[in-house]
Image 1: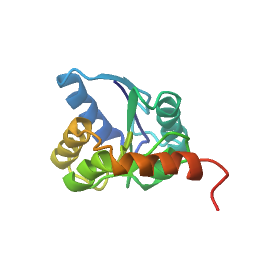
Image 2: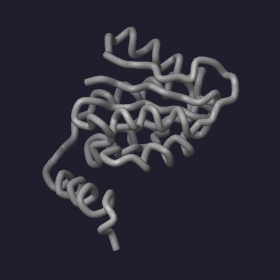
Image 3: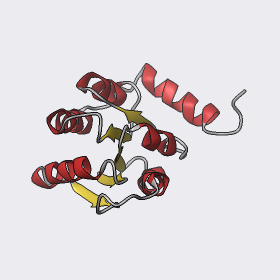
Length: 151
């Protein structure tokens, strides 16, 4: 599994902490930027990571950060095959994987402390999708909501 990591300027510091964690745990990842706290267009960086996950949703995940996590959630969920979850605690991280098979984790660099964020990342990366009835719902989402057929 490849992890695509991205942030805007407001999520940069926490992204660097997440990056250090991924390095320590030997995850295969790519840092798509930004590479400083200089102001950037958050949409551009969120889109880079979400596009990578969209292209290979079975073999990749994204961790995308901004100040609140909200903007990155919005951009992430615009991409087909992306199920992005804004998680501010361990429970939502776990459930986003178990029930929603989330493949993008959104975090707010100005909202969560480093220790909590790293705990969220660990749970999110190590929680399996439950499948079963949840698989049917993900299929409905893909077949009916991600396409223009939804009414």
